[in-house]
Amino acid sequence: MKAVALIESIVATIGKAAGYLNLLLIFVIVVDVSLRAIFNQTAAWVGELSWHLFAMIFLLGIPYTLQQDRHVRVDLFYEKFSPANQRLVNLVGTLLFLLPWAIVLLFTGWNFAAEALASGEGSPNPNGITSFFPIKAMIPLTAALLILQGIASCVRAYSGQPPEE
Image (tube, rainbow, N blue to C red; front, side):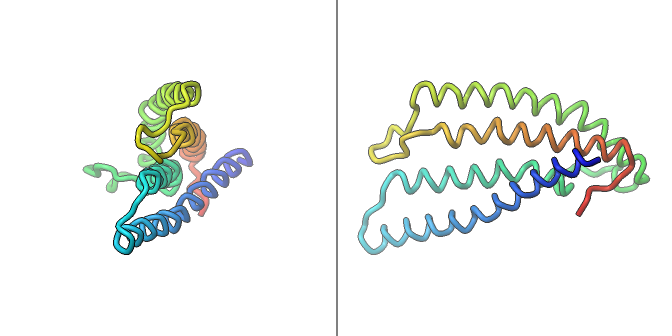
């Protein structure tokens, strides 16, 4: 269970750090709005940076949300199930749906990011962000974290242990 605790610690640390990116996002937006209102100026990279920050917050928050069992679920029966049956649903759902799709996302996201790096892809806008690789690299990173957290969740569900708070 030390491996599970380590995985969950990594996922939690990254998820909480992603939450702090909201402060940076707010700052970027306030600066952009202020520059527009006061000097009637803006730069393409500022708007693009706000989108990239939002994407990072969203992507890096996904594995943490899974860990905290805060994903939206269509709950027709689950809530009425016993804890043992809830763990079984979580285990089967993770094995049949989450892990296979996260693996697909890992490989396709890796190719997507590698193409951006190899081609030097950046913004088509003048004064835009010069490299899209960092934001595209968040996709396979998120997939890898999802896979790790999915494995940790499976181990916890199988062993009957609740997530650590």
